[in-house]
Amino acid sequence: MKKTVKTIQHKAGSPFVNMGPIRLRQPIPTQGIENVDPFLLLHHYGPYKINESNNPFDLGPHPHRGFEPITLLFKGEQLHRDSLGNESIVRAGDVQWTTAGLGIIHSEGPTKEFVEKGGELEGIQLWLNLPAKDKMIEANYQHIKNEDMPTIRNDNKTIELKAVAGNQVNIKGLIETQTSVNVFTVKTQETGKMQVEIPTTHQSLIYLLDGEIIANNEVTLKKDAMQMVTFNQDGNMIEFEAKAASTLLILSGEPINEPIKQYGPYVMNTQTEIMEAMRDYQMGKMGFLPA
Image (cartoon, rainbow, N blue to C red; front, side):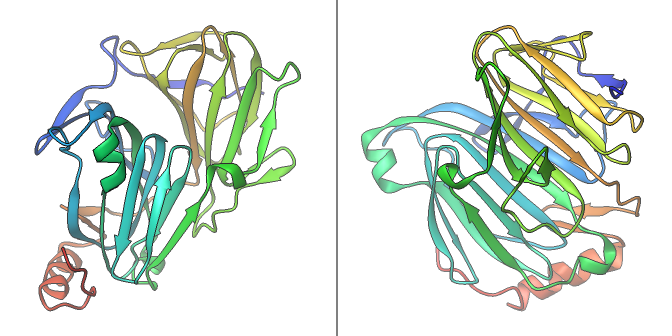
């Protein structure tokens, strides 16, 4: 049975916000949608034209605690470094999944080589909450390359779904998760249909980066128009039909249903825990990463 529609984003598309010099779309949180538990934030950045005279997306070292910041890169090339000693180049189609846990410092931005040659940068920054019992687990970093992701296609081979995390039909994403979640990226040609299995207990959504699709035969999503639809916890399946070559993100997860206290780069359960996170960062307990 198909899940029923819960909310449809307004006709102007995902609202823009300014993050310092970066202007990006923020479908979560937005008016009427505080979160889609366990997903707390969804930023869609780009596509930006990056070159030596225009590179606003160079994020220096900064801390996180209590959740999992995830980057899904669709265009371009970024360098990731963190206080665990990881250093990796994330290319178009790759995913980096950081479990901040008790604390991590990381930086990311276009590689020097990418800036020198120029090109388009586009991606999704996703914040996935951790339950109280896991907020202070050891920090960890996972990098999955595009070519290694398990993939399924529809019968006509016009739609390709890649499992970043979770399960779909007979494939399983390579990311090891702390909670029950599905993260799927989808590329379509101009036509085709696909059904995606989603547990009845999961909160879920479709976010459209580019193109046009119809979800559940009732909601049309278009770039720069309605770009996101969320679903109720009733049916066990979402169906979509491509009306143009499209790129979309499908998310679902078991709600955590716990109090959330958030301040800047920290997501905890109480204000006291937020103050402790700030103190621990200032005292160097989250590690060190040179600029």
